[in-house]
Length: 334
Ligand code: MG
Image (cartoon, rainbow, N blue to C red; front, side):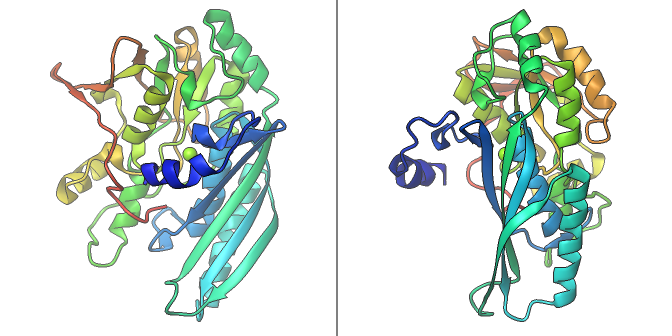
């Protein structure tokens, strides 16, 4: 999919003169100082423990703005429904979108609505796009970071990791994917794991006020493995991760064992991977723990320029490469 994206789409859509262009494949792009992002949501089932497609569509777009250091200003939404879609379900989804918008302090101000024949679509697809302005705390945050070591980017881009930066994750990994899978027909199993789907802009405001954050990414498709590998690759560095520091719930671990999937490769929808200059890592961790969204945050690793890969150090001291997931281990969870 990434090769298709690069060869067929991105290479043919020139983005000369754009501050953060499409070709960076970061969470948002930036043009004329405005952050801009878009995503389409096809999750099945569209109601799952801890959330639904409406909450997901708002959170996903708010989070893609938040992780580059922007504050959401407004969203658009395109909704495509299958003919005969239950009106009550649609009402429930819209109510959920509204609650999530209110919590994150943003609005949907433009949209589109289409109905397709029942044999062309199963259920509902929602696209959301969002624009954001530079966080009022981003310049302060980068000044703090640069007072310790020079990081050249003006936004929290994936390519901004430098040797010695500390890697944090803002809470438990794998909850969203397991919650969606557990409610899917045919493979249902007993678990009390709920999706983590939530907007992260409030949490980001708190940590940017402290300062020292240099890069961030929401580990959605491909999970933690994909997020760490993308950041490392784009920055030309390696990352050493301590496996026993990665927060994974027992319910997620056992479900993953049963299903034969890697918890680090499952998508999350309310978490961020954050890179911080080492001098500020403890302060950022403390600030995260003081927020509702980041209360289970942990320091999980460190950036190493002489490592070529993302390397997991296991509890017994062994090391293995944390590879980038091939394909999508868990389809249609976002
Ligand atoms: Mg993202």
